[in-house]
Image (cartoon, rainbow over the protein chains, first blue to last red):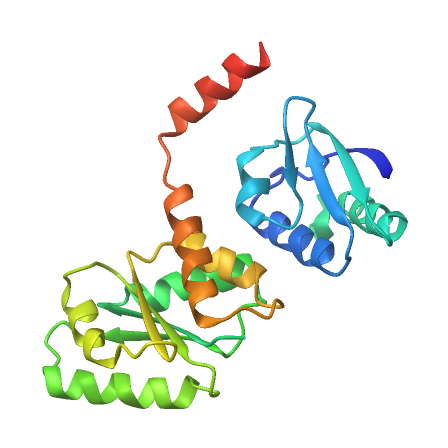
Amino acid sequence: MMQAQVEITNRLGLHARAAAKLVHTANSYSADIFIGTGEEEVNAKSILGLLTLAATKGTPLTVRADGADEKGAVEAVVALFEDKFGEGE
Amino acid sequence: MIPVLVLTHGDLAVALLDAARTIDPHLDKETGALALPWDVDSDDASNLLKQRLRELDQGEGVLILTDMFGGTATNLALPFLVPNQVEIVTGVNLPMLVKLASIRDQDLSLSDVADRLTAAGQKSIRVAGEFLRSRNARAS
């Protein structure tokens, strides 16, 4: 299992368009990938699950992956957060 | 992937699909919208629908998402219902289309797509206040 901590830094938080990008990134890996807030954890391949996190700017999140390509999966998800989902703010 | 047609009266189908594509551009050309004018003749509407279904069908069937069970758009689609070829799910909403975009890469059957979208649509209707209260109660 691989795990990493990230923080949402884009202004709108983990909103629908960002969640859609996250799902497509997650879907390109075979590993099971989860995003957690500490209180709850959801499947990163489920857009409606991600939206129920209602994660706003500044929320610390845990990215966890389990499977053959778990390392690449965690790195790709972390890169998305660091890139602010390509939103530039 | 199973092609999907959003079918409503008024401009709802087009607006819903536009909104979903803005959220997730992965909703490809295999997803279509047919918005029927309120005063459309039912034979004309039926012909339009038949034509769109033919265009979309790649041999694995087509899923039609309509606005409301019992509504004209649904009633118009009912004669096209064929087991394993054409299925209809009523009560289309934005979360269903966003879900559809996220499962586009998966190899799912017509009935699987219908079931997944139905579950997504139903699950996404919530009283937000109750949802947040139950979450806060769990957290404390």
